[in-house]
Amino acid sequence: MKVLFTGIQPTGLLHIGNYYGAIRNWVELQHKYKSYISIVDLHAITIAYDPEDMRKNVFDLALGLFACGINLERTILFIQSEVPGHAELTWTFNSITPLGELERMTQFKDKAGQHRKNVNVGLLDYPVLQAADILIYKGEIVPVGEDQVQHVEFTREVARRFNARYGDTFPECQAELTANPRIMGIDGSAKMSKSKGNFIGILESREEIWNKLAPAPTDPARVKRSDPGTPEKCNIYSYHQVVTPEPELTRYIAHGCRTAGIGCLDCKRKLLDNLMQVLDPIRERYHDLSGKKKEIRNILDRNAEACRKVSGQTILEVKEKMGLTPVWKV
Ligand code: TRP
Image (cartoon, rainbow, N blue to C red):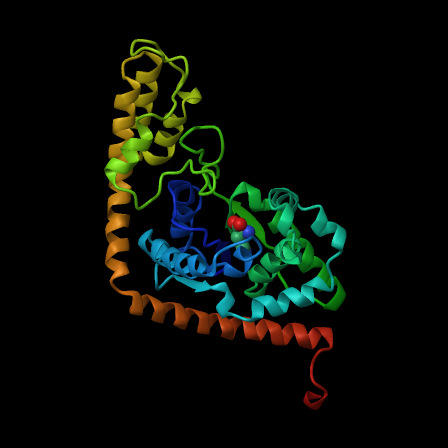
């Protein structure tokens, strides 16, 4: 089985953009690949944060991922900072990475622009740590959103460079994009994100979600109930396309929009019903797991231990190839 690796930042509660854009895909792929999913706290500390929030967010994210269907038997879900090899491999990769390549990364330029007062070395080195995450398990399949494709390409470059310099060690990984890698925010103007506040949380109640959906913009052409619209111009319709499982229902909604057969509010009500069918069980599982914190902690411990073992092997191999083997071993 090929190795799948992906990481997710502990930035607070999950939203449906995370779920439909990434997590649901991981839940399916875990049956096809040997899967590692890391809560990447070492990446998260490259921007300003509160240590108490971090502690809480890391654990909440683990609960959230399990609640969404990440399976204990099939996926090794672990906390990045609990496996020291990631940072160690980063350092060795630093020594073969040209500075200019990191300075050119799109995400670095974006984040450096957003956090002008905190452009730290970690922010620049972020992609190298990401490459170490993937390569330390010899990962080949990396399911990510569009915005991470450049980092996966960079990882391939690191692997090639290492292999050329020190001998064949790492496979060349590839990004595996989700069918719908870009879920827009409820205002329809930007990608759904925690920081933009335009999200629907996966643990929100029916009422809370309705309060966000009801005033959400639709196709601007539909001013009155009797005005026909274009579903492709409606953000709510774009949600239907990912949330509503039966294509027949989606077609019915598209037709209703074009012919003014269905009003925007009714369309939103249908969306709410379909969405809650998915979110209700996730919320229930989350609350159930919240009562089992000790068990979850034990699982994370066990998984970190398994990762330390596998990554320790790679570190040994890397050190050997780089001439870092202690003399007493020869
Ligand atoms: N940078 C990724 C993001 O922000 C998270 C991440 C860290 C990751 N390490 C990874 C993703 C390794 C895939 C593989 O979404």
